[in-house]
Length: 581
Image 1: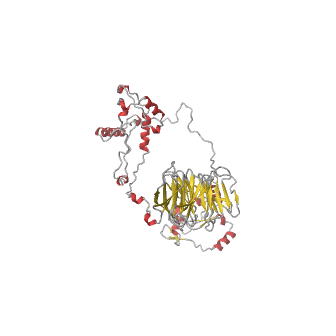
Image 2: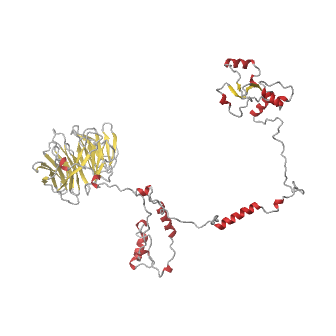
Image 3: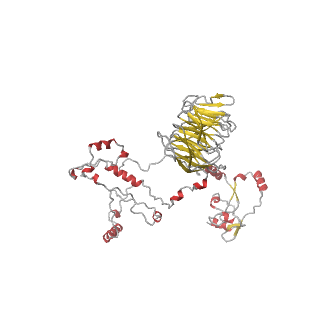
């Protein structure tokens, strides 16, 4: 202890001459304790001695070059470390270096420690004669504990006073509860009136009684008809039966199944009520312009052209609008003066006239008459196409009048062709079959588009004068409007007629199109096509024209517009041609 006191009172430790004094004497001048040395990083001293004086740090003004030179010249530089408590450099001994190496390798610090020594069993599993410890038992093991007696007396008193109640035994019986009985009316759903009460079961009626009235019992024929019906068609899902008394009623076999379905209905019921929106029904109807704002269009019957003795199947007007040609089942083609309804010429053909077409070239006075199925002209008047009523590869033929030669544009049949048309501007050719309308490019000789009419049987077709819209009539009372720039499916389906459509037509100058049907009416619609591609066409029915009488369940067979005036011609099964202006 004297050596320790002397070493702490002097400024430098004295050299020890005793061999064991080096391990006893230590430099404990610094008395800062177990604190981080980073606290003295910015101060010139590092702790205080026992007299309260500052212990200044040794002067360390070595730069990187001095450190490098010392590293190269000092052979013990690698084993020299700095003491953070005193700031002095300490040279590690060989034993300390070996200890560091062993710790870095994960070994024990003591060299003589053997971690793999054999284990020594202090107790064995064999029963021996003499015990391990032969200490006599304590006296307290024979005397009851006074502390435990006091605790037990306190617990007994608390149970008698009712302060401590015994635990209730657990009930093994399952508990059932109402799923919607404890809903908070002040919750969010309650405030917004979104609460939906649980749906109630239907109360039993007289047919579910064990002794129903006689009128609720089924006869043998009714039972047989009930068994042959589908389960979705049953008015009752059971057969009413009659029993002598309530004791004779057997157990219901579908009880568990119905209870399970009831639980599913309650569990899967959507707990949300849709908010009713107060909308005026008039606001849901699109705002269409009034018909009087869309004039002119034909409104009244002006003339009736009489003379045919059978069905008038086809009509055609001259390019000037002065003459009208009509074909009939009586085997004649009649030429009428439009303004006077006077028949100027009757031309016998010798067969049923299916189609007539006036050449659109005003310089050529030429009419094509067809006893096959259909004939149509190209816009320039040199080519015309015909349709034959068979299912061969020769259904469609294209003819050229100037060279007097014909050609077959299709190598194989694509279905039963109903009608064909030339595009008014572009070199396109429209072929309508029963379900589709195919558009072919005559220059490239390839299929351009395939329009799906969404109807069972196409009967007629017409192309808008601008060439970007097509209408198709069908035998299932539909009129399909196609926008070729929009889609291959109908832009709109009109179901204004009650029976099959026989003919449709566009006006060449006015935004009008018409359709004739077997119900004996001609419906005129306003069809405005805008130059703006982003604006959809405006389709408004404006007038229903009547006058034709039904004959053999047939009505209007053909409609066609006047080339310059807002007039429409119609031919019917009653043998007349009518003009509406």
